[in-house]
Image (cartoon, rainbow, N blue to C red; front, side):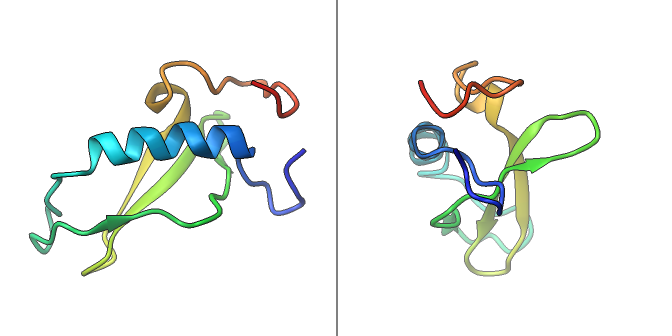
Length: 87
């Protein structure tokens, strides 16, 4: 189970990091032109009114932040409702 801070499960974070490494290896920030992107070491699970699991990616230079849909980034491996922490 995730802790009270509502984080993605470890296996979900692994899947998201795989996607991030593939997708952000050569992305340029649309605000400052920087090329350094990062994610938090522990990812908060951000769910809004429509229950879409989102995760942030931000530019290390200017802080510009993008939010991505975890269900799409993991090609459907992360689902809603959540499965209790198993893959």
